[in-house]
Image (cartoon, rainbow over all chains, first blue to last red; front, side, top):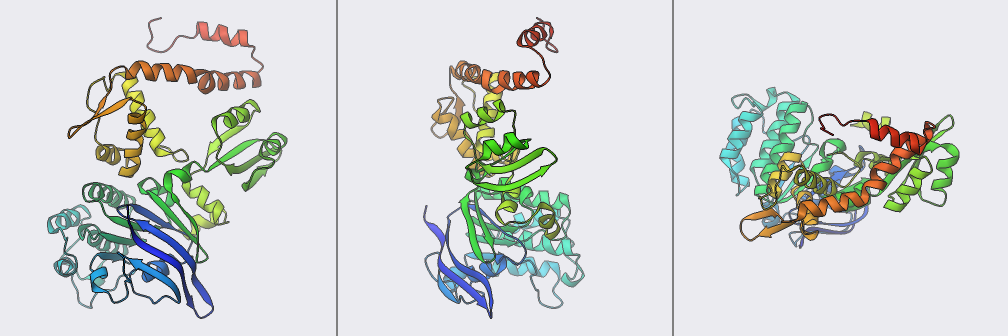
Length: 296
Length: 122
């Protein structure tokens, strides 16, 4: 499959802040990619660059084979749902859905109606009067019903309750199955979305640190738990992602194991526990679980 | 589906379980990739990967323009493969735990003989 987005050596500096630093990656067509990373890691800056809303300091961006900056033929194929979308003063909710077809040629008004109903969005209300969650729902509906060949969702769920978030994930999957398109989902809630993702980009401190198939990532780490001496003997000589322990017990996260290594571990009385995508990413970005959850 | 193990492997195992239990008899059609994706809330490409794993293993086969079907003889094949793995997957962990508790192999064997499975007639 040909890549929809191709980036090489991309950097964006704001004064002395290196928001994005020497990023090179591509996004393949019709995949759902998770853009993951901590607050301030550079996720939004990267999406602003890909959608032509910021100028790169250095490097090259090709979206649908061309630079996105002020390029109408590229931009009309992109839908970018921003975390804090601004609407014209005095806009009512219904105005958003009335004007959306002007920008998105694949707009499905019937699907939008269905989503408005399901998210219980009051269309006769001023945008200014919406709650944070309702405002997020407006963005999600635009993002889904626009069916743009390349859709970005930047933290689209702020203020949404668990029911509405699940609704978003379900409708995204269903509609994506019927109308495959390239989707980039930037999120903190990795556990909630990890199974929706086909590909993962992890950005840390402006740099791309993981660019990998989601299923491959799931196999890349295991936590070994047992008595300190047994664990240390087993993990000796391996790359260690994380080390934890209490009293005589140790818990060490290492790379993935094959069947015979697993058998050896259990014969040594060690317990193996799987590492979720979220835990793996916490390990890779060098923060503790608590810090990460607080930032979510 | 649980985190930490490849989802497509888990999906393949679940389809195999359904074939073993008879929920998916041989020569019946299995749900589509998109149906699996929606039901398990997983990426359709991942679901497709799970289904393809079973196609490659000869468990499922494709009827052009219709969908995926359970191959004849696949149940026996799954039984054979699972029996080969039974020692590693079930017996070894059982003996590891038994050893921790100071139970001998004979005591474990005796337990197996006297334990009746719930709902079983033997």
